[in-house]
Amino acid sequence: MGGRLRSVWPPLLIGFLFLAAWQLLVIVQDLKPYLLPAPSLIASNFFGDLGLMSSTAIYTGTTALLGLAFGTILGIVAALLAARFSIVNNIVTPLAAGLAAVPIIALTPILNNMFNITSRTPRVLVTVIIVFFPMFVNITRGLLQVQPVQLELMRSMNASPRTVLRILRIPNAVPFFFTGLKVAAPLAVIAALVAEYFGGPQEGLGSRIASSAANTAYGRAWAYVVASIILGLLFYLAVLAVERWTAPWVGHRRST
Image: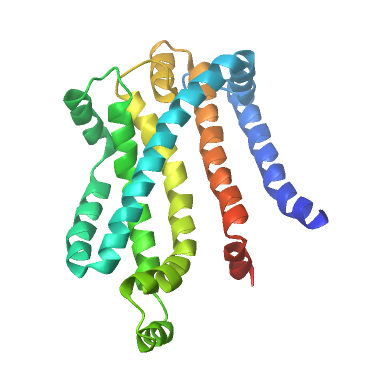
């Protein structure tokens, strides 16, 4: 318990000092909210309408969760095929890299035109595309980067490719899977947020940030940004919890 407290208080102290300096800067320089709102103003907007902040974060979180789930499933399937067939690896890897290089701000309007802009589909698809690349790359590395000695042992025992996959490759890919998921989970929130910013139902954090800024409600806009940060942290912490619950040896192996 003492070790956990020692690891937690330094970032909390730095965060408190940062907010205090921010508040002092706004007061001393008399900065207007459209330039930089004070943390006190942001906090009053955030806690003053906590119900709306929560419901808006839940809407964006649902979009991000759907995109994360579908993108992860696609990444796993593509990685399994790439590990089994080299031609699939040679084809899918450049395509995945190309999709990852496409800017969200360019992709979102195209998908909004292809699908109903009032539905959740375009934003989920954007999130799927963003999530797919880190999941595919990391899982493929985990499946292919096995120890040669272990692979030779399996071959000497005349193990089938399916047996090698189940006994050797998949367990080896578990740490890589969680590494990709730790990257993809916050990215899913960012992708959903940016996709909402460019149109669609006014129920998500991205849309609320855009409308609040357009109406010069800068304190409220920053309050939605705080809600976005909290949502991204929750996604990341959820991945850490799942990793600790399902694969505790991964974190133990990294710490030793």
